[in-house]
Each structure stands twice: as structure tokens, then as C-alpha cells.
Length: 102
Figure 1 (cartoon, helix red, strand yellow):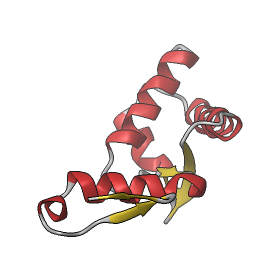
Figure 2: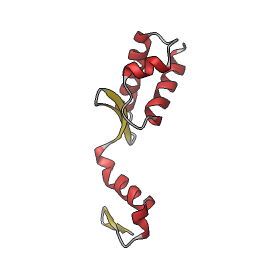
Figure 3: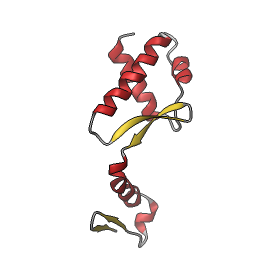
Figure 4: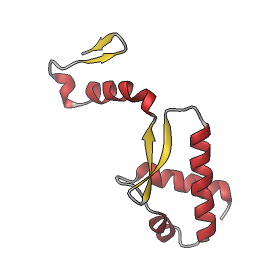
């Protein structure tokens, strides 16, 4: 399997998984991919997201891989979760760097 395609598939699996996805699970989902290629793709994806200054990275959690939000953006994620949740209908608010989101 082409490396770029494999990386794209694995990235999509990490994104879609409700819990950390294990390397063994990825290998079961992609039996045509060589185990070495899966390992390398996971490392390359982790490296890409680590070097990128974006809001997410790939973390090894509970024996698997999961997208995580960078800690410096946590206040914005909390505001988003509050704003888009059922709590947004209530009188709750969150402080967003000096601004209150209601």
C-alpha cells in the first residue's frame, strides 16, 4: 500500500475511534498493510503532528493512539464544549481570556 494512502487511512482511524486505537487493531483493519509499514506510518503521523503548530497532536494513550488537544488551547476547547453543549442553554458561562462566553 502506498505510504501516503496508508498514513491517511490511519489518521482517519485515529480520528474516528471513540477510544485510543491500538496498533494491533489497525493491523486487523488493514490486513494488506505490512506491520512495519503501519508502525512507520504511526511514527510519521506522530512526528508530523508534533512538528505542526496546530491545535492537535497524536498521543499514545492506554496502549493506543488518540488525537489530543494541545494544552495551550484548552480554554478555547472548554468554551466550545460549553457553547455547543446542552449547558449552553442554561445560565452557565466560561471565561475566555477576559471575555465571558454565555
